[in-house]
Amino acid sequence: MDLHRVSLLITLSALLFMTVRAGDIVHQDDKTPKKPGCENDFILVKVQTWVDGKEEEEFVGVGARFGKAIVSKEKRANYSRLALSDPSDCCSKPKTKLSGDVIMVYRGHCKFTTKANIAEDAGASAVLIINDQNELYKMVCEPDETDLDIHIPAVMLPQVAGTRLEKMLSTGSSVSVQLYSPKRPVVDIAEVFLWLMAVGTILCSSYWSAWSAREAATEHEKLLKDASEELSNVGSGGVVIISTKSAVLFIVVASCFLLILYKLMSSWLILILVVLFCIGGAEGLQTCLIALLSRWCEPFARSYVKLPLLGAVSYLTLAVSPFCITFAALWGVYRDRHFAWIGQDVLGIALIMTVIQIVRIPNLKVGTVLLSCAFLYDIFWVFASNKLFHESVMIVVARGDKSGEDGIPMLLKIPRMFDPWGGYSIVGFGDILLPGLLVAFALRYDWLAKKSLRAGYFLWAMLAYGLGKQDNFRHLWYAPALDWVRYFPNAGKKEGRTQASMDKRRS
Image: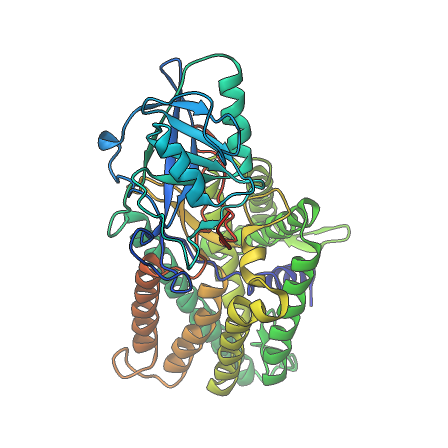
């Protein structure tokens, strides 16, 4: 196995654990039952700030189960002055009278509802409760509480937002805020493009795999006619055939890899994943470009030069490799920029297509074992791992908790164009790669059996994947699995990614 295949297969081991889902702004929670005065949905809330009339940072909080409902349209949101509570926890009556101000308070030794009632009696129009850590909690009511006639909204903000707001107030400037929770559109065009990318990647990869298999079979037949003695590995060179044992072993290795990431999650580990992705992406992009250009530059593709350590390398490879390496390196350096998603998608698609072309399922039995094991893997690490680790291992790794990064790079993403919350629509590599292996096998079988498009398996497998992925996006849009895992832009006004372990808190 040459260096090219080794680097791709090493990167492949990092692909499977990425099955990422987007979040929504509303979270239904049956574990915190509603009752009169405490029946709001938990929603994400935007807190836009102004300092001396100049628009400044925007923070994201979560609305309480109690209090007045928060408006959804920015033009209907009140523009109110922000005041710091004294005492800071607002567990007793503030020393200053408020006249429609939004009061900022800190966690203390009294209930959230107590803070809201005291703030309302003092004349506040809303209360911002600053958490004592950089997570958001669901503010709920006690089962026996009766003083729930609260007519002002209550919003929790993370600790970092409170620190920045207090810094604004400490300068003596006039600080004002707006609270609103805009609704997401029914469908964002980013979802459509992401669906086209997923389906298109599998479609192109399948035809590439089938075409390569047919070319190898044709070459094999020619050698048979010539009674060549070089038949030993013709048609299998450069291809990895998955067996039943290796399919199971792959899931086991992916589980171990995921567990290592969970236990050792840090910025340096994310950096290692970025380097692996750059190596695999550059190799994949090079393979795709050479396969595409070799039709028009056949003399360069068939002419070789010997290089130290590398051996025989075609002139086309020498021409393409610097571009691919530079492209991957530039993405690695500028991966935090707002335009970096383009390079990530290009490298990701090239990598997935190359892996589907190289790694092949030999029969339906192996495909069934592989996808069944992957299904159990996904269910266990997303949901069942809560029982063992008290949190979803898949979610923690996907978010990049404790790493200081916005998550791992093994996914395709597109910015939401018409979503007022911004962020990205995303899909993990595993959601494309694993079904793609089975769909590519279906097309290779159809061509080998000389079945028509309608009579074969490929068309129906492709339709099933497309419809399944469409349904998957629809369900994730309305019923997300990851609570409020959001990918807010780091630049500009959008600040404070919501990590949201979303535990229940009453005080």
